[in-house]
Image 1: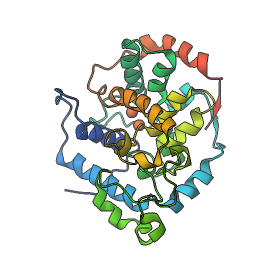
Image 2: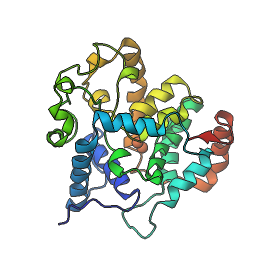
Image 3: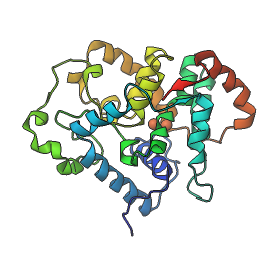
Image 4: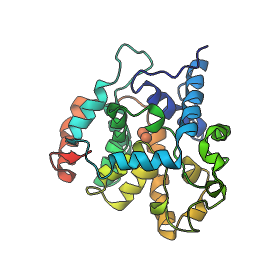
Length: 283
Ligand SMILES: [Fe+2]
Ligand SMILES: [Fe+2]
């Protein structure tokens, strides 16, 4: 079986997300879609590349390329259309376009009576995947995130692949605290680059802080699920991580539900988007 990474845009992105849901099954619900061995191999290969290439230098250089935001000006729906274009309809493994996962997550949040900003966060949380369209490799767009510049937690998925990361040779990066100070706060920590960190910067002017935390750390499973890296957090991070944890099940466990009627829901979501965002925002 081939372990070549699948380069069809966005295909592996969904497979990687679904693998996360499999790693953290919901209590009493193991009816989530199973995958072929081929998909699992794809996920392994994805993390091999991710853990090999996400170095301190890579993160710093990529941040400098994107921040401050200067790539383009786009409205929310324009960006959503842009993401949808990448889905290959002929692929039976892609069941839902990106807008459907977005709306499904948002609808589950709405059904539980959460406020508008929370619903909106569900809608936009994965839009940082537009990075794929800016030609970033998939390992720099999706998957679990983790701090760089300090020792990797053994609870990060596939920790053995950090053997391949050149930061292993830099003694300063291999201590518990690495380049950081105890309790320095996550805002001072360099996270591996991906759709989470990128979208945090895109959304910063428009969404409340709880939403910004949900977006920025939704793939930081080593912290919000495994309770690692507490020593880098300050009390404010710990407080805000309550929201990251609150958000997580909506992201993980909605993909198996019935797909939303995107067309019928669109007017409601258009109004919601208009109440938070201007016509165009910086990406
Ligand atoms: Fe995500
Ligand atoms: Fe998601």
